[in-house]
Structure formats: structure tokens, C-alpha cells
Image 1 (cartoon, rainbow, N blue to C red):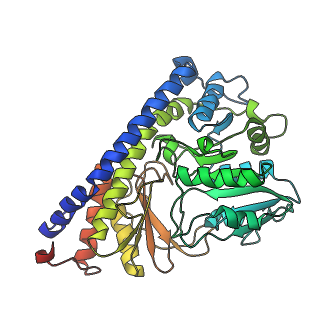
Image 2 (cartoon, helix red, strand yellow):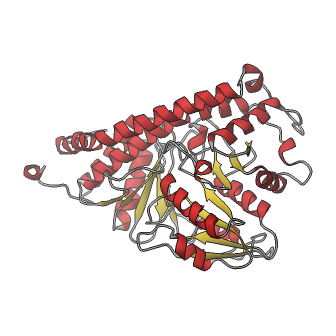
Image 3 (cartoon, rainbow, N blue to C red):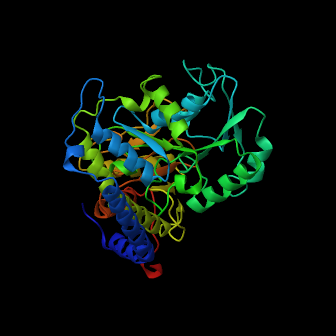
Length: 424
């Protein structure tokens, strides 16, 4: 990759700007690594657990059962179910919601959920098997002027049959801020003060280990996420998790598997070594991704483009949005990230339809594991203001390389201009 002197100056300045944020990320990663180690010790994780390779029904798999217990402790909950059979975060979230909701119940979302989940809950498209088809209602509570959930607005939107209030920790393909643990604590406590019967669900995708606490520590009743995102540490090939209060996890596990089987079954085959090791690696890998996000923000801010969050803002997930304003800029940047990937670098992604999305999506994902967004990806729906969502990065060095290549590509093709040298 050829990098001009001007871009090298920008890169060096971006690293200086991001340096204070790097130190904060390192402190969080160290705290989470220490906490994970203590949890592994508490549950006496051993080679016996890791070497389990159950098949068939998977009954009496002590490696799986111990992993469930470790996940529950990690996320500050009573119970958890961790399985390779979850095909995505949307699958785990849908199993959790279907598990605790019944026909006639109302689900209230704080702000619109991301595109694929809107389909699952019946807010768009008439797909078979949505919550709407099962007689479960879903409505959206507006966010406040800053784009975050307002407990008073949520309370005003509650109905008599509201059973679950859902909070989405990450921004997804939206322009709102991601939610911090502090904000989650405040929102959940105020909801519970007025309606202690409400189940508060948190979509934890992209947020795991970005802070020193998790939604369970903030009072969430039920949470879910994907193992090919943060908690898989970049090596888990498939899966997801649901964690929360014991009765709720049992209900969700019945939906995931079958009533009467729930937590008791599910062959793990040969996935346990990567699940244990990936979880242990996750704080470090998430830290690398967060450093990459800080660098991306700092670099693009120097070009005059908006970034969300900005370099000075606290990080609560691994997603970094860059607003390109123009379609071709966004598409070409994502293609440049693909060019700097370790896998399929020769492939040029093109905007195309994707299941669950209303708009064409451009997706750079030259990853070792298909769809793994803890590895470096850059994607987004093709709609104004043309934001690309840069996320993940197994090493900060790879993110720096790829994003710098993206800037250089845009510059060489005259899709952006950089400040004059005298201004740099």
C-alpha cells in the first residue's frame, strides 16, 4: 500500500489525538481481563470442561454447563444459555423475546430496533412467523432530543399488557448514541420504580467488554448477543448467548430448543475449546477494536467528515460511524477496507439486497469467519447521509492500516480533499 507523505502526517496526528483514549481502553481491558480470570477460577474451569465433545442430544455435558455458568457470572445474571446453534444475534434476541412473550402481550422498544429485528417483531414485511403473526404487539417509544431513551417517555408509552421493554445498547445503523451502562442503570431503575413487573431486555450486541460492567449489573432482566461479535474473541465460528434471571432464561431456552429440553440439551461437538478461549481473549480483542475505532474517528475528523462517536466521546460499543454525505465516497471506502483485508482482498463488494434490510447494503467483510463483526468490517445501508459503520478489528494495527488505505484511496480518486499542508 502506497501512502503519501500528507496522509502519513494525518495518520501520525490521528494516533496522537487518539492516545488518551487508548489509555482508557487499556485500563478497561485490564479490568475485564482480571474479572474474567477470577470467574474462570471460581468455576474451576479445567481441561475436562474444554475437552468435552458431546454429540447427539448432548445430555450431561459438563463443559457446556460450566460455560453457561461462567457466562452468567460475566454478564451479572443468574443463568445463561450459550450455544453454537444460534446463527446470529437476531436469532438469540428473537428466541429470548419469543420465550418470555405470549399472545396478547405487548413489547415496547426504546427507539426503532435495527432492520433485521424489525422484521422479526413484525414492524415491517409480512414474513412468516413474526411476533405480529403470533398475536404479540410491538410498538416503538420515541427517543429524546439527544437520541437516547427517556424513562418518562417510556413510562408514558406503557400499556396495561406491556410485558417487555427492550433497549438496544448499540446504535446499529442509526445516528443515535450507543447506550452506556450508566444510562442503562438509570433507565432500568426508573422503569422498575413504576412498574416492577416489567421485564427489561437489553440487546447487548457489540457492547460486551466495552465497559467494566455489563447490562446484568445494571439491572437488566434478560440480555442476548452473538458469539461472532465481542464475546467470541474473534475465534468462535458460530453461536450466541442469552443471559438473565433463571426463570426467563429457562423460558427462552424452551423456545430455542423445546419445552422439557431447554438448558439440558444441545451437543457442543468440538466448539468448547474456542468458546472458552475466545471468551478469555475477548477483553483484549475488544480493546484492539476500540483502539481502531478511536483511530478511525480521529483520522476522519481531520478530513472534515463527521464521526459518531467523536474521538473525545466515551466508548460504549465497538461501532464507529463515518458520515460520507455522498454515495460513491461511502462505497469506495468500504471497497478499500476490503482491499486491506486478510481474506478475499481481491473481491470488490457491491451494494446489493440483504435479507431483512429495506435498502441495498454495501459490506466489506474480508473476515476469517463469515459475518464476524469483531473482525474488521465496514458496511451500511445505501441511504442518505451515507454512513459507513466501521467495527471490529482483531488488531489495532490492522484497523490503522485499512482505514489509512481507505483515506489514501479516496484522496487518489479525488473523492475527498485534505487540508492544505500549511493547515496541517
